[in-house]
Image 1: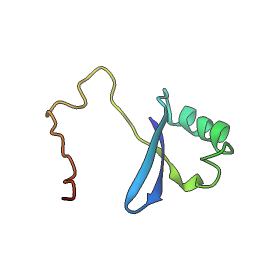
Image 2 (image 1 turned 90 degrees about the vertical axis):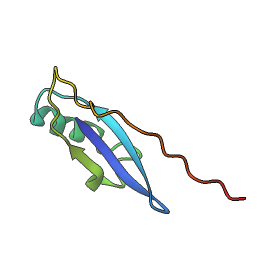
Image 3 (image 1 turned 180 degrees about the vertical axis):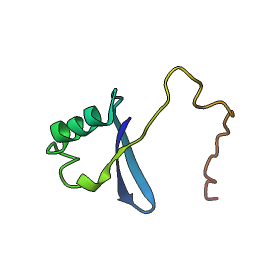
Image 4 (image 1 turned 60 degrees about the vertical axis):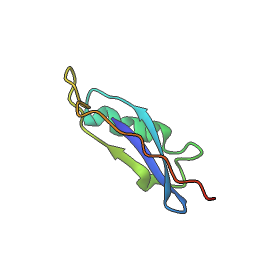
Amino acid sequence: MLWHVHELGGGEEDAKLIGVYWSRGDAEAAIERVGSQPGFAGTPQGFEICAYRLNEDNWNEGYISVFPRTAR
């Protein structure tokens, strides 16, 4: 999986899933294709390649939602 992540400020970040590729080489080729595009060119260090196992459950522990407290 190829992601691009960069800081927005205030502790927030923007993460985009670019794509899911068969091999690391394919993901690296994708970086070459999109790396000069707006949003990516200014933060080339934001690309992350993450291995992901196919045909198995990758999120199997449930989840909870956390909502920020509103100011009163």
